[in-house]
Length: 212
Image 1 (spheres, helix red, strand yellow):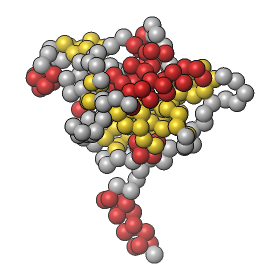
Image 2: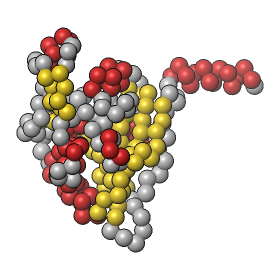
Image 3: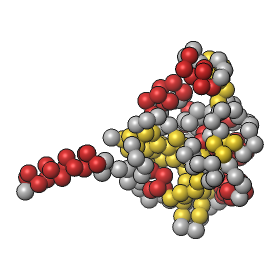
């Protein structure tokens, strides 16, 4: 029996059975107009080490971010992906589990903050409007491209329409000092929204995290 348990543990390690299990998410406190706005982040083997180290501003390990929206089945994650293909919109709306259960995931986290119900409704309406259009992933990482977005720019677009004037809505200006990044981005100064742009200042509370 002991040998069988050891074998099962080895197989689980080899085939990546260790996966995040996100706790149930509350819509918000009862009997008032406040609701929770959720932010979901994940980090993978391929991207976390490079992107997080160079471009994150809070020390976070996430390399991809999405925002919580309300659907018939509860809370889902709206996010912009870079692997949708040319014929499919890059804006995906997935269950929380589908967002988290991706190959190579090394880190996952959920943040939340209380907002007014009308503010969450505004975010939901914006996501719905964008979902009716074709959104492409912005491989140039240029802020302001019409229907061309990267994941954190998409989240900033939604959040900053609600929290106008908030400091987190100011893009980061970074001198690259790296020939590889300069060549890929075709610039020396990179103005962008980091995937963890919402974390500094304690605007969102870290509710849950997982790593392996």
